[in-house]
Length: 547
Image (cartoon, rainbow, N blue to C red; front, side, top):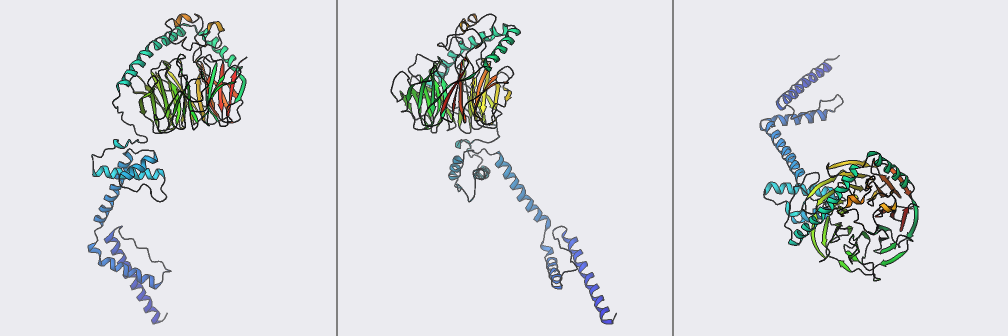
């Protein structure tokens, strides 16, 4: 090795030692604040010199750098951001996108941003409200009628009219004797020996298995949305998506009268008046948001009364109060209403669902009302006080059908998740979940006609729907050795093109009725339990029964 090469090696070693010393000083002085990549053997001379200049400039600025202050500032910003997100998560914001846009406009914020969806827009509203709440602790959240997701809302009450107070008293007076008669029948059934109950249930299964198709009729040019039996069981009515309402005879399934002058859009709700002496025999609700009251004893295609200002969106279901003096309606405007029929005035507009209210069912005593909505929630309301006495929370799909059992404490709910749940009002919980259909479960109806296995002479007259409900001698009218047989089975319909019959003893499937070519929109059981009705997407209504 020549002298020149030896000098070069010495200079290189000195340079590397000096650079290593510089890097160590920076590391010990700055801690983790400055991170310098080690120089790789393949780096160019230019890259090494550039790193050296950067290190020297940082060493010059070292007295002005305060790492602890920088860390504290970043930490404060992070904590403030997390605190804002926590407060935003607790803020109640509406789930309706139209309400979200309205609130953003009122707060002076853009109603939408580029590529922003409803979920992102709602999150942005919650952040804005959280900031606003921090600036002004007196910001009134209730003024916007907000509804939080996953948070329990505090009940509130609003003043009612004297007419509503009078109606509540009348419903209480009406329900008490019916509840008394119902309890007498329950007491009678409790005295029947277990073998008699078992024999009746076995006979019931044999009868239900024999159920078969009896006839079918084309109802119109649009799907048949709903079909319901009359209180005497001799007729039934259908409503289609074209706005038409028709009344049919049960015996030959011939159309008795057609009503086309009421609705401009689909008929979703249909109910017969249990008061057979009233001229207002039939009520319907349409997609136009209107309610129509009909009389079937005339040839006029128009309704007797058309109520236009009750709801702002389509009416999904209607139901008469058992007294026949009131009409309840469920709407897509997230409310249900109670109407006084003698005066044709609304008594109540009740909120309680975050989305459209679809299902509606009055209690057989007339004291309660069950509602179900597209928020997958059902509620049991006390009509005498206005309170919610039970929340039916358990479905993962829209609640589309509800019906009370004659025993007064069981209510069935059918939902878009294909299941039917059994709710016990006494236990205040769901006691059974039935996988009713492979698709959407569209409707559910109890058999309320008593013992279909009994000889005809021991059954109440079909023309008198209250024969087993309010009579003071109801217990004496029943055979001493036979149970009443009420609410022992029920029917469900679904979008799997089937109608299913179920036992209420063990919630098992007894019979599947096939015949529809598409979705089954609704079902019903006649007052005496002899016939089953179903309406289908293929514009057909079908009758099922036993020879």
